[in-house]
Length: 320
Image 1 (tube, helix red, strand yellow):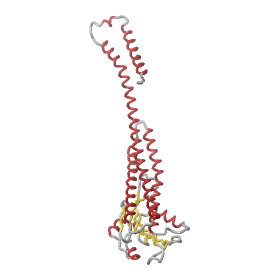
Image 2 (image 1 turned 180 degrees about the horizontal axis):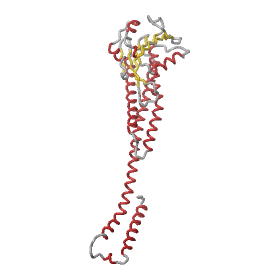
Image 3 (image 1 turned 90 degrees about the vertical axis):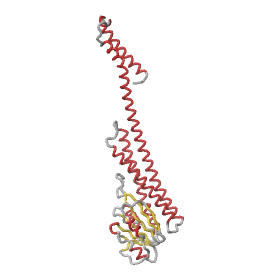
Image 4 (image 1 turned 45 degrees about the vertical axis):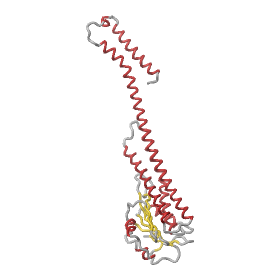
């Protein structure tokens, strides 16, 4: 657990303990999920505010999706961020719980939630004032979580480009289609995550117990816009993957048609030759050609001329 005191005009100060609310500024209490059971005692002790029991359960649920709910005393936001890795293969998410009170921000997350660590490092490095309100600090953390989604787009673009090159460059298709299907699953999961995040932030804008000023409204609209970029990018990648698959099958179909065209030409060329050999191979007793001295050479010549003649005709018509 880490406790920070943020006051206008001063850098955040980390506190070893906290018995009561300070006279000025606000408090940020950051808890790891494994040490969070019983966290509801903090709002009760500092602000005399009771936390809804369902909200307590939701805050301790690791797999909870992005979600907002509000009361008359506080706002609760659960937001899914990326895991500690920048590589989205596989896509790992870490949900963080935000409880925003008038002068208190309480967050709950797992230990490897990189976005919270990045915000703490940023706050420690500040030489100017800290965010003026607990709501602004919550927005800073959420914005950092969304920025990591924006950053991961480069890795997605690179990996999916490699998959598309592998797909279109192979003669017989990819040896393992599970890799491509896994990539499409990740892209669709990213789309679904972004949609849930937009709904949660929009619900926060409409259902907050606080009066938001114009600056806060601009920040939240900007946050929604960034999430929308991630969702639009994911949908564009999904469209590109579908187009690459369609192009792959079109190329395979074209190669198959070319092969079948060659087989068809060969079959048509040999069809009349087979007819001639079939006629002269019949075992009739009286066949005038069999008694002709040059009949054998004539038959061979006719077959050769007919075969090359038909091949030349197909070649001239650009069938082969």
